[in-house]
Image (cartoon, rainbow, N blue to C red; front, side, top):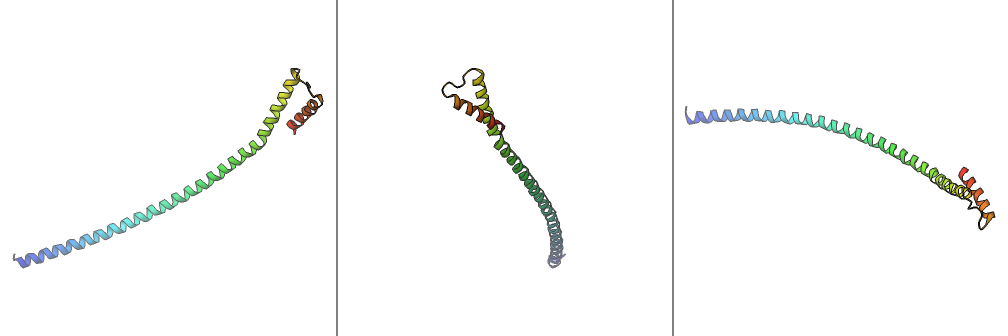
Length: 118
């Protein structure tokens, strides 16, 4: 085989290899694009689910916080009034009533009772 024929054979083989490589690269690119689109749609779906769960969690958390605030709004004054009334009943039971001002002691005791039941 002469050098010219060898050069032609090498050129044809190079062209065929280049054609096969080009086709393979294009097929791999298309496959990658399809996989990327699938991943992107999965990502979008997961993102929407996360947003939905976050929204639900925030609503539940805000309801819990609101209920805790409402309970504290009524619980704390009730506890204070119960403590004051208990203290007064303890004082009456142990004979500490009306040492200095009996009228104040009587009115304040009535106030504590009404405060507790109010």
